[in-house]
Length: 614
Ligand code: F6R
Image (cartoon, rainbow, N blue to C red):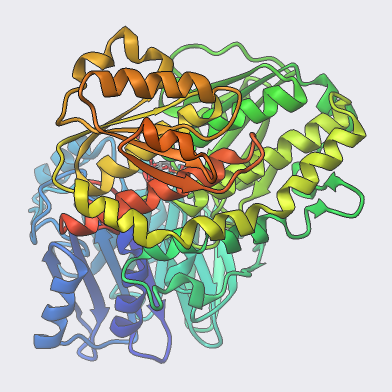
């Protein structure tokens, strides 16, 4: 949730940290702050409530200097999102400073103990207990590193921390406990970086190490050491990141969300590259570690995910059941643990996650693995926990997704599930070679189809201009387009704050039809497939109740213009790939509605990009 950046080296730390925080602001924007070790040998802190721009203004009037520093953007959990609770937090006697992501579950108990010892607290946060404990240990005679380790061992819950102390100037200590989001260490030349997400430091280095659960690191400008909480050194696993820094910047676009919607043809190409053998009509997913024996043995699949990734799974179920003939259940990761799923060694669990660090998805994955399932994941953030704990995974290749509303990761994960369905059906022998070749051939046109939808952006904007004042929307779809109706509704509500429901069209008559009147527009996905006639009848029912209908229809379908009030035409796509195309106009419609309403598209209220709390 929160974003963390740290730097130690010859350059000015505050400037580097501020730049990094800008890349992480999608993780939280309740408050922001930076601490640096100044020339006078003391910590100086600048922090403010609200967005990073407030901190930036503060830094202009009250600059900060130093060669080691830590910074934070906050998504509040404990304590109001005000200046007093903004990170970094300083210990009572000013010897230790901290930034933190996660929740210290036993903080009340620890705080009471510290208060009984005479420690006074300056904030309402759970974070502050950590920094006060480290200082207490140092003052009782422990060396800084030992004090940090002692403290970390006493914390319950999932937490990621970065700590600096006056006793070890120009050094950083950081740790990861559980699934509170990762920490990537960036290795530079005579300088070291760290961040909760790769884009924050990618412009400085591509050589990175990702901390595992219950690991900590000690950084100086010229050295790093990874260790466990007992101080045992752990050999580093250094990754070279392929993402380029440019793709993590907004460029000519007004918003990251807009940029990411327009990147979809490219992210689809990247997803297909190296995996689809168009010549031989085959799909290769090397990181999935699939064997014919495994593919044939799996007799049940759970797809588990949250939010947009969950809707992707709902559509993926159609692909996998249709082609690979594996019974597939799609579950909210936040519910997975609580309904006792039936898992054995012939069950596979597929986690879909853009960030690779959603706490609920990780918890579901870990449970599935512990119960003997084969754990697969489709994950965008390279090196993330989800990728690391899986027996097999598909790296999404969407590139950095910064806009809080997920767009390109959604379409990319749909393509990945299509590829998985092809690979599994090939190994299981559930489809003919001819059919597989056809499925693979169909993929070749996908980037172009996506591009053609984007060419009509002005029409979606015009539609948004007509509808941006509406208070409620109903989205309808059937079959594989039902999840697209839900995703379309989610996009609208999260960035424009308009209430929207996504429904399977056939269910309308069992309740939601009561909502329809002239104030409630209906978006009906009615592209040409075997359910087309049924969708038309649903449109007619909505019209009969006075509803205004916007239909998403296939190019060339002139007849639908007689049924619906407005038509968004999309190019015809093969049935299992159609959702990837049909969702794009809905993304752009939501985007333009939100812009017209003056909403903060990239940082919608109350949301954060990576949800690392339960
Ligand atoms: C919606 C959105 C969220 C995420 C959800 C899961 O636009 O972004 O609903 O899809 O929080 O996140 P990941 O995929 O990172 O696990």
